[in-house]
Length: 533
Image 1 (cartoon, rainbow, N blue to C red):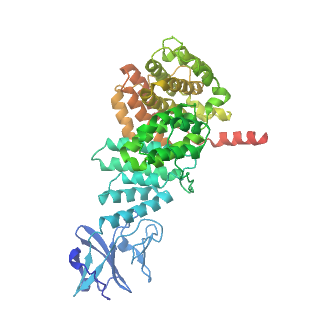
Image 2 (cartoon, rainbow, N blue to C red):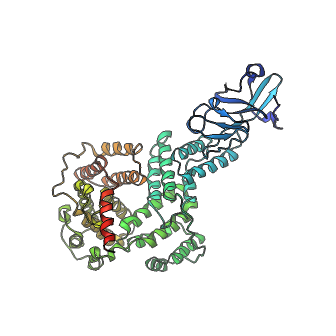
C-alpha cells in the first residue's frame, strides 16, 4: 500500500488510529467508527482513501458503494458519484467529506480535524448556491442545516437568497419576498426549536429559488440622483423605472433609511387600486425584512419593490373600477354609521358608494366594518365556483382572491395609521375588494360550522399547521401563512364576537378544498378565445 502524504502542521491536526493494516489487508472497503463518526475506508491504486460513510444525499452507507479504477465512488442507492480524491459530487449534488489518511507503522491513521470556519462557510455557501439555482428543496434544507451546524448566522441564508435573486425577478417583488418576512416572524416565535426554525428558513429560500428558476438577470440602472419625494411620485406614476430607481439609490447614498422613504412608498402603493393590493402588502413586508436582516439588503429590496410598482396593473382604470377615482374625490361628507351588513353582496360601484356614505365617520370605524365585510366574504365564498367550467375569464376566482381582502386590510391599517391622510384611499380600496368578491358568495354564510370556541387557541393551532402545510405550491403555503398572521394581528384589536368571525373565515379557508389547476375550464376558455381571433 502506498503511503499517503502527511500535512506539515501535524501537531495542529486531530489524528486518530483508524484500523491496522492486518485487519484491512483482505478488504477493499470497510466502515470504522472513530470519535463518533462513521468513516468509510477504501484501497485505491493511489493509496488509502477515507470519507464520511454516510452519503450526503440520504445517508446510505458508502462503504457498500462501488469504486471505479479511477477513484470514482458510486452510492448504489441513487447512483450519486463522488471523486474520492476531492469529494466533488459528479452527479451535481452535495459534496462528500474526505478525510486525510496516513500509514504509521502497521496502522492506518485518519485526520478528522475540521477546516477553518471561513473555508467551511465558503464551501457550504457555494453548495447552497448550487442547490438554490437547481431549486433542490431537500438539498437547500441540508445545506442550510450545515451552515447552522458550523455556527453561522442562520439568517445569512435569507440575505444570500435576496442577493442571488433580486435582479432575476423580471417584474420586481413576488410573494417569495413577502413570504420570507412572514416566515421570519414565525422563526422568531420558535426560539430553541431547531426543527421549526429550519422549516421557516427553507420555505423562505426555496420559494425565492422557485420564483427565479432559470431566470436571467434584469439589471437596474446604476445612476443615482438626490431623492425628491414629489419627483419620485411622478416617476412612479409615469412608469419611469430608471428615474425612480435613481432616486432611491441617491437617497441611500445620502444616508437615508427606510423610514425616510416609507411615506413616499406608501403613497405610491395607494395612488391606484393596483395589482390586487400587492404593492401595499409588499411594502409592509419590506419594512420587516429590513428591520430584521439589516440595511445591507435595503437597496436590493427597495429597487425590486419600485420595479413591482412600475409594472403594477392600475385596476382603477378599467371599467369595473372606474368609479373609484370619481367617488374618492367626494370623500368626507357621508354620515352613515358603518356596519358590515351595509356592504353585504354589493358590487364594486355600490361598495364604493356605501363607503363614501360613511366617509364623515372616524376612519377606524369604517375600517372595522370593511374588515368584517371582507371576512364575511371569505366565510361565504361559493365553493362551487371552483368546479364551474362555463365561466368567463373574469369568473376565474378562488380562495386566494378572497384572502387578499384580509391581508390587504391588515396592510391598510398598518400604513394608514402611520400616514392618516391616506385613509380615504385605503378604505375605498378595501371596498373594491369587497365589491369584486361579493358576487361569488352564497346568500347566507354559515358561521356555525366554523366558529371557534377560543379564537386565540384556534389561531395558534392553524399557525402550527402551517409549519407542516403539505402544499405542493409555495404560493398556496404562503397564502395560508400570511392570511393567518394578518388575522392574528387584526383580532388583537377586536371584541370577541368580531374576532370569532375572522377566525371562522380563516378556519374555513384552511379546511376547505382548494382547486388550483382548472384544466377543462382553461381549455374551454382558450378555444373560445382563439376562435374569435
